Image (cartoon, rainbow, N blue to C red; front, side, top):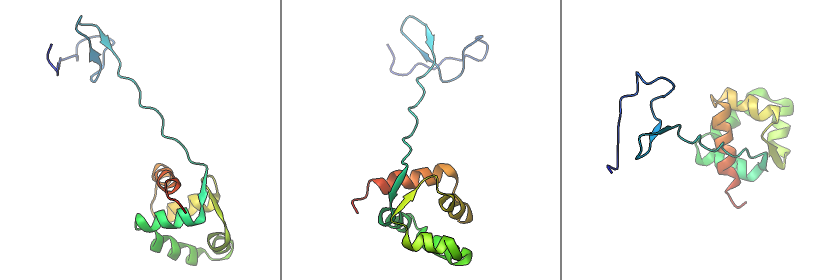
Length: 114
């Protein structure tokens, strides 16, 4: 059996490109990727280190300074950053991060020993 078997399935009803075909010619849908783990919170140190590694710390600090008030108190004094915190979403949006990118930053931050 060939290691790679590409077949034109454009006219095969109920079959989509990317489906798998076994040695008997039976089609099956590829397994859906497992959903990425959502990290609910990280320490402030982990978050700031990851922002620095991803080159977002300086723009986030500028956004915090521009917002001032409670956002500045939270950024300076919070010991834990919760993923669902409204300041996380607001600051992420200000620096152009999508919710998925914020999730990615939280996943990477959780790996940091801090």
